[in-house]
Length: 306
Length: 254
Ligand SMILES: Cc1cc2nc3c(=O)[nH]c(=O)nc-3n(C[C@H](O)[C@H](O)[C@H](O)COP(=O)(O)OP(=O)(O)OC[C@H]3O[C@@H](n4cnc5c(N)ncnc54)[C@H](O)[C@@H]3O)c2cc1C
Ligand SMILES: Cc1cc2nc3c(=O)[nH]c(=O)nc-3n(C[C@H](O)[C@H](O)[C@H](O)COP(=O)(O)O)c2cc1C
Image 1 (tube, protein in one colour):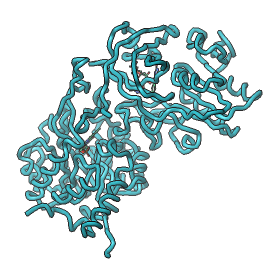
Image 2 (cartoon, chains in turn green, brown):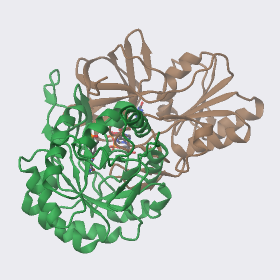
Image 3 (spheres, chains in turn purple, yellow):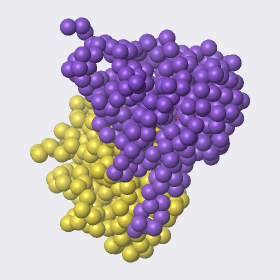
Image 4 (cartoon, chains in turn orange, red):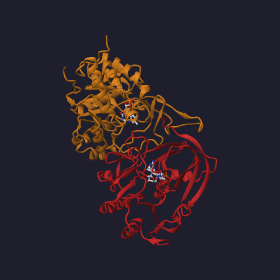
């Protein structure tokens, strides 16, 4: 029986398996990234970095509900100068590291990428899709086809690294946005960011729980939406897709890959199953592949399509 | 579990010292000494506090007045509502029969209080800057007290007093909570004498359940892997006693 091989080649980056730590979950320090690598992940993404330090929103910033998680962290990060120090010898982490870069205008993205250029990141990801931080993403109209094209083009000019554009599940014309990113030179689409925003009200306090009142919805509730987004985008673009949203088991991962993802991101899954969710997902994928006669990830990508 | 605050009414308030008040509320929390809860004041903020009293469905948090949030807690009245979620984190380990010592610096004593009760026969060291800041004097009658200005008890820090005690006796386990520099020195003293030590670390906490990465200390999440860490783990945590991470993710010295 052929050996099952979970390794993938994503835009010429070699990953031992298709799981990727999604941005904003545990990606704050090099030590935490290392810890995630020790738990079997294929690649990791750092918490998004902006030009200046940001405190983010006040607590409560992350809560859960029956169907998943609601967060409005508000892009807290130490700013690019401190991030450049934190992630200086990033190759020590032991797996490819993706730098997530944010900005309020395209010049910011360029500035952050330039200042991180001494670190050996394997790829750049630009989320144009956060639903709960004023000045960024959806609240700054960065997710329209035109803005996506403009920002991606500007970033494309300053980096040779593989460039991933992360998009929102909220937009009806999601394929047009993905296509705009591809046309502007993106090497992959990360789909999706959190959806909504949503709100949870504490009825005894008679107030919304999150301090920002609204927050992005992730986890189980997001999965069917993320699967559909990836399925649609797969038909619209030729570049690979990193499928993110509600994945916490091997079956979820296989489902996402069948929809068209070449790799899968995991965030909220860490809450559901612990920091070793990556190891668990890989074991479950391997077992499923064994039982169903698949030997490589490539042979599963997109097979749910007609 | 659903990580959302549940509203509780303040049942009683006691003054522990000029700067510290304990707020009591009814709760059926399944709580272990050393764990913490996130306390929510709607529209204001949400911050971590140890449960410092826990008996028959009545729990309490002892709050040192520091900034905006703790001031707001001090201004609350009986019957006012607070949101709480948790308990979170890994607490202290409680072996059956060990000769142990708890060392509390300042409000750090709050984290050790329910542990002290659970351990029963235990040596207690509490230190503050000055006499009026000592808490729980009625609650723990035989404390070894020290103050930096010598206004009561031994004149010096908890580290000084603990080192004095070690000249006369030894312990199988030491538990410490207080300023990080203090905890680091207690940890070193214990290491040099092969005494097991557990400390409760303090970092800026956001989510409380291990996803946001804010409270990292050398790859350990204070909120879920800690806040209590034993010596063998502390030995591998380079940031312990040295650097912490501010709310905006920047590093600062402890
Ligand atoms: C696990 C744990 C248990 C704690 N238990 C107690 C306790 O029992 N009694 C007590 O009085 N205090 C306790 N604290 C500290 C308490 O959370 C802070 O004193 C409080 O958040 C200060 O808020 P503030 O707005 O009044 O002050 P600020 O002016 O905002 O801050 C004063 C100090 O508190 C720290 N702080 C502020 N927000 C947070 C946060 N979200 N997480 C961690 N630290 C923060 C700041 O870094 C600063 O050093 C505990 C902290 C931790 C991490
Ligand atoms: C607490 C939290 C913080 C996040 N922060 C970021 C961020 O800084 N940048 C980003 O691109 N996405 C961020 N996200 C979105 C995730 O990367 C991911 O797209 C989303 O959570 C969906 O995946 P999941 O269901 O596996 O969590 C965050 C999500 C959560 C839950």
